[in-house]
Image (cartoon, rainbow over all chains, first blue to last red; front, side):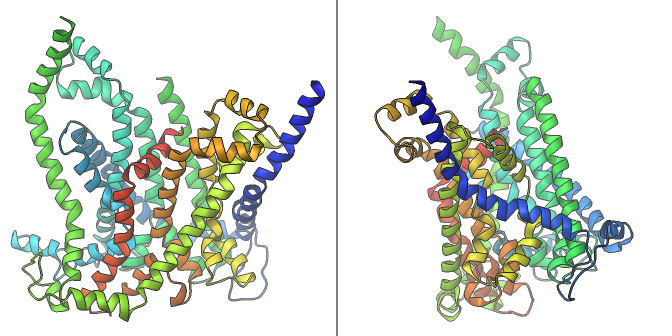
Length: 297
Length: 288
């Protein structure tokens, strides 16, 4: 009996190794080894255009402090995130609450608002750039016919980040709305009845007494994933502005891409990638800490 | 009596919210118009001759119908069928590899005991936070060294294993009752049979959700194809849009016919697999 159990355990162990082997091999090749290499590369001046390389320690990281483009990219990313994040959080929250109270058209709205999430952003970004065209775009037609001055949405350094935030908001709202809807449906209706007995009968009271606290874990998740999305802004910049005008839309990830794959400064680009990952880890940490707090609540 | 008390408060609440609900509907409808307008404009423009695309007074239906010409140019005159096929091959290959590697690994992590199990699970969770943008430099250099630039393999390489799928499926498999697995073992099922005949069928919702999610994500991906694709023969649908970033292609009608051709497949996938897709997103949030 014991011998049989022992044999089964051994056979299971061998089988388990066989089952995980392909995944383990690929995780090593795709994640672990490249992670080690990217950190190592960040300590070198490796460049694709010159032969050989030298170890330069933390020089690449020191260089960031004096690199104007780095400071500029950081600032641009921050400005973009400050415009993008409130919209990416509150608009979907409002939509989810409004949709949940609809009966008949609920699924129609759900489908419509979700369409941009599945759409190829590179193609839809082209459409948005046409709508935002400085001379003939429909948005400017609307503005001028309302007696307002036309806006150079993608060509003006002061406006371009707001315009990009508008396009990416359009593409993400449905995603966050679905998350909020799932959170809302999970709130037991008995809580609302209890709140009503406690005198919270106005919708605003009900929202702050029940919905908002019960939605806390979802809110944390939406806030953190949206922050990461904001930090990863790339596609729309690559296809519409390439960092222009005057580096006004050059955001962090786009600069990292330029340094690595346009200027071939692999060492510096690797250092930027490491910083990039550091920031994402920070977000993940915040999420874990907040998630613990909100679930205890 | 119980019926009365159950219905009465609900009715009161319904009556009280009603104006709010009407207002909500109006705002939702206006927002929906803003959301769908780019699609209407895109499809409308794809049917127009160039000089009508930017006409000051926009009409949904073109005054001069150029749809046949535009789509003919895109689908016959330009290699768009190739671009779509490339996307299909790459996304299909990625998905197949992801399922084949993730399902067995997730089963082993969920239901078997082996040395290094905790380390593997920890590695999987840690890798969840690493986006392709961080590892792209070593991966690119490796692809160059191996002479694989501009091949399907290099386009799929970074995504052949999905740590997200492993994690997701593990959570799913863990909920599967051990007693059934034990009973199957007693009945002489091998572990492979257990996976294929018991676990996978039970995990169909999770697998379907992940599949739609993965396929759409890689169809829309721009970053990695931009790095490893060099020739038109390997260009993906999403990457092909980069051709229009310069302002020199002045055939606008054709441009938006191309944009429509690239966007439509995933819209169709979404409309048919809506529930699976949305489940895929909410599952990513539920994991905790």
